[in-house]
Length: 99
Image 1 (cartoon, one colour):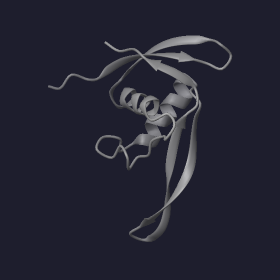
Image 2 (cartoon, rainbow, N blue to C red):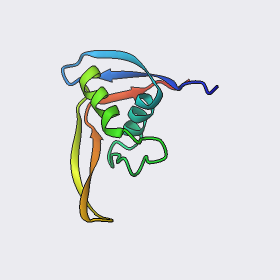
Image 3 (cartoon, helix red, strand yellow):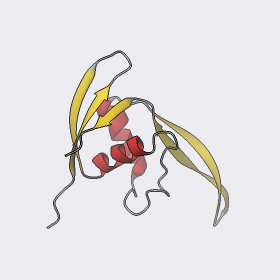
């Protein structure tokens, strides 16, 4: 049995409030990816080896933890012609605890 990922984060909201949270599984991996790719953002395709439900993990982070995460549409060519995918960028300042 594989041990489930568990990570702690400190959220610094724009009003100065602080909150420490512990996330597990893919939600923790998603927030970690958003932090590591802050300026360039993340897409489901970029995280395709594990983030098959990226929009759901983003929804959890927005709704349950009140994180500001923007989504812009990026055009791409697909099998059925032109399409788009979402590029997610974390706006809230979040620090990941190491160790």
